[in-house]
Length: 276
Image (cartoon, rainbow, N blue to C red; front, side):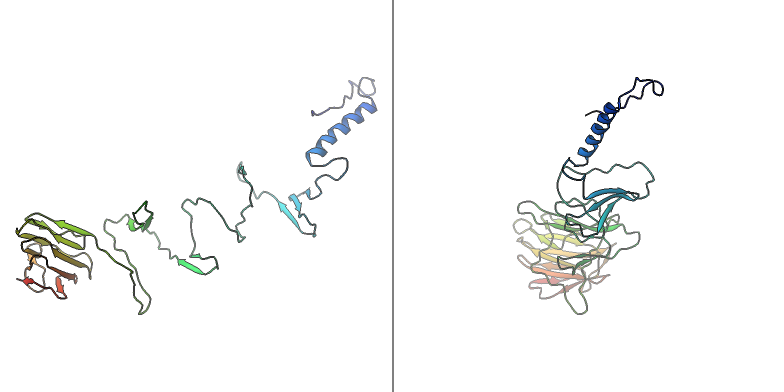
């Protein structure tokens, strides 16, 4: 329906404008269109639960209990566009307790904690000023397990897992990263914990062990080969082995070392390990 304008003629009372009847019909037609757009008809009021006032659009509930909801715009500093998606649902209010489903959050800021469904703390977060290092969590496909990694701007990062009071960190099952050595002369990895010597036949293998990176760090040596595996802990030409200068593992033997910050120590029952 188009807007019907009243013809008022060229000059006052010149007889060229609409008659009173014509003018009334146009007025009725225009108001009928507005009435229909607001949801009204000839049998009832227009939008009985919606009205306008100086603050905005006022809504009443399906049951009028005298309480209104007013929708208005805050102070506007620039042109804004608010788009409602092509979907049904509830509007999210920042102060309301609501359940969100299938929402993608990009870099959300979390204050102090993530709570469970009962409102109890599940994970507490402590912010560090100017932090540049963090955890990165990655999921895994098929038989690959998920990964929790220390990441950030630093090249080498420790990861700390701290119990409370006299409590312990209890691990269901643990496995160590490993390095397999097959050449006559090798250097033990600084990042792997389990060092496996696997030289062919009865050939010997000589392994250089450098400094540890963290106090309390362990190295586990296993000799799968048929020859002797001799380990020399050294740094800048000086021995960093507390019990001598070398230790040698017979075929099919193993041993464990721990780093105290300056030297490696053999710990536990070493079987056929010979200290030199």
